[in-house]
Image (tube, rainbow, N blue to C red):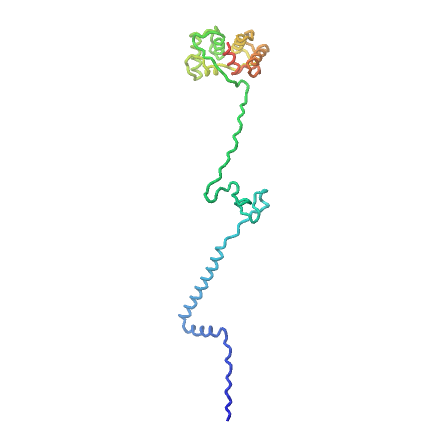
Length: 258
């Protein structure tokens, strides 16, 4: 009798999720184990998410490129060039040394040229020291100027005790050193600008000084056309501004030449 071999049936294919289902069925009857597995899955998921976020955060953002439409010519770098260097790779002007932290030396702007400006009656002035015992037209000019300021003094061209007393009073009233000597400070306080149309003792002083300096003129105390012409001639002769006005420079020249 021939025995017919028993045919073996091929095993059915396993479902890819069969093992997972059996695991879940087993865990369903063990709540504690299922909780542990769920916690482990959540921990792994959170860790993977944090790693992904950290990798994305460490990526350096692209360098900002200035808008070339907003820059003046030659102020913005060409795409691909370093914004802190020029095309030859050297530090741009004003960038300083990034390695040492030092700044480039700044070249100071050139100093403006100082051109002296000559103003009318602004030349070098020299004033004589006049004190007790002096005589002459310079003394007479002092006496007339004192009178012009209200300190009536006889114009006798002699610096005596009365003239000294009046000088001391005048100096005291003007907060000057009250020494009775007419020096630069007292001269500046005494003189007054006189010009065409003026009258009084100060004009008389000018007329007497003009005469003493070879520009003869009548002493009438009136600054008329003749006085103006004499003053202008004197100023021209002594290289002063020939404006016909007796200011500080002209007074200084008049009292020093007598």
